[in-house]
Amino acid sequence: MDSIRVTGGNPLSGRVKAHGAKNAVLKHMVAMLLAPGHYRLDNVPGILDVDIMGEVLDHVGARCARQGTVVEVDVPELLNPEAPLELVRKMRASILILGALLARVGSARVALPGGDDFGSRPIGMHLDGLEQMGAKFELRHGVLEASAPNGLRGTEVFLEFPSVGATENLLLAAVLAKGRSVIGNAAREPELADLASFLNAMGAKVDGAGTSTIEVMGVTSLGPADHTVVADRLEAGTYALAAAATGGDITVEGCDPNFLRMELRKMEAAGCSVERGEDWFSVVGPERPEPLDIATLPFPGFHTDMHPQMVSFLTRAIGTSIVTENVYAARFRYIGELNRMGADIHADGQHVVVRGVDGLSGCEVDGCDIRAAAALTIAGLSADGQTIVREAEHIDRGYDNFVETLHSLGADIDR
Ligand code: EPU
Image 1 (cartoon, rainbow, N blue to C red):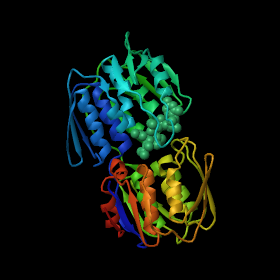
Image 2 (image 1 turned 90 degrees about the horizontal axis):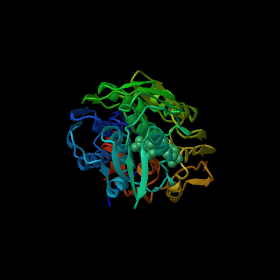
Image 3 (image 1 turned 45 degrees about the vertical axis):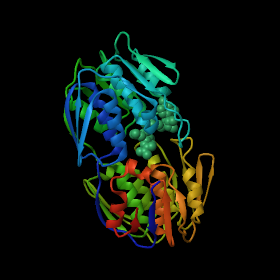
Image 4 (image 1 turned 180 degrees about the vertical axis):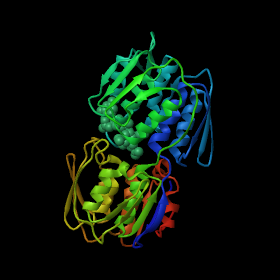
C-alpha cells in the first residue's frame, strides 16, 4: 500500500494546468465501441482509471496504446460483448458498455456492479431507459444478460433524477437506435457535452447535450474520429481548494471557470478572492475561511466530488458550516479521518456539520476513495506537523501527478 506524506504549513503558490477529465475520457473510450476503426484521443490524463478502461476495451476485443497524453484505439469489426466482474469491480463505469454494445452488437453480458463507499448505487434508471428502447435484461448468477432482439428503437425517456451514467448509457444506445430519441431530465455535466461532441464527430446526430433535454436522431452507422478531452474541473477545483486551505494563491489554466461556477462562488463566500478568464481562474485563500452552507446537486449545482475537499477547507472556518449531500446516500467515511486530525465534524443524516477549529494536527489517516484521499491531503497541507495519507493509490485513479503538482506549488510532500 502506498502513502502520501505531507508536512503542513507552506502556503501554496503558482500555476497549474488542468489535465483532461477522468469522467469524460472513460466515456469516450466506451463510445469508440460504436464503430470499428482507428481512434485517437488527446489530452488524456495519466490516471489509473484510463488503464482500467483500457483493460475493459481489451477484453471486448479492442486494442489500446497510450503514449503520454495520447491514447490510440483500434476497434475491430467483431467484438466480444462482455465485461466480467473483476473489471466492473475495479471500475463501475464499465457498466456504460451496456448501451454501446446493445447498440452495436445487439447483446451484452455485464457483471452487475455492487455497492461501494458511496452507498448501494443502483442502475435501475439505466436499465429502465434501455428497456424502453427495446432492450431485454436477465440477471443470471450476478451477470446482466442484455439483448435487443429487434434492435433498439428511438423513444422518449424521462429520467427521475439527472443521473450522469444513465444519461450516458442512453445516449450511447440512442445514437445507433432507429428513429428519434429524447432524454428528458438529462444530466447537464460538461463531460456529457464533451461526449456528445465526440459522438457527433463520429457522425452521430445529438442536440442539446449540456441542457436537460437531449435529442438524438439515430443513424445507421458511425465512423472513427479524433478528439481532445475537455479539462478536468474536479482536478482544477481540488488544486484551488488546496491552495485556498493554505492561505496561498493559485492560477489554474486550461479550465473554463464556468465549469466550476458554483464551487468558485462558494469559495468567494468563504473569503477567497477569485479572478476568472476564458479558460483560466485564480484563487487567493483567506487566512481562515468564513463558514458556508452548501448543498451538493447535479451540475450546475455544487459537485458532490468537491464535497470532501470543501469540508477539509472548512475545518478551519471561523464558525459552523453545513454541507448537505444530496447526490449520494453515503459519502462520509472521510469524516472520521479528518476528526482524527482534530477537526470537529459530525454527520446527521445527509447533513455534515463542520464546526471550525483553530488548527489541525497531522497524523496517519486512510484515503478511502479518490476525493477523500484528496481531501485528507488538503487537510495535511494546512495541519501542524506530518500527515500520512494511506491508500494513496485512490489518488492515482483520478489525479495525474498529484504529489508532483502540489510539490511544484511549494508543498512539503512526497510519496
Ligand atoms: N442512481 C440511481 N439509479 C440509477 C443511477 C443512479 O439511484 O439508475 C443514483 C446513484 O446511486 C447516485 C446518484 O444517482 O446516488 C448519482 O449517480 P450518477 O449516475 O449521476 O453517477 P455516476 O454516473 O455513477 C458519475 C461520476 C462520479 C460522480 C457522479 C455524480 C464517472 C465515472 N463517475 O458517476 O464520479 O460522483 O457522476 O456527478 O463519471 C469521481 O469522479 O470521484 C466520481 C465518483
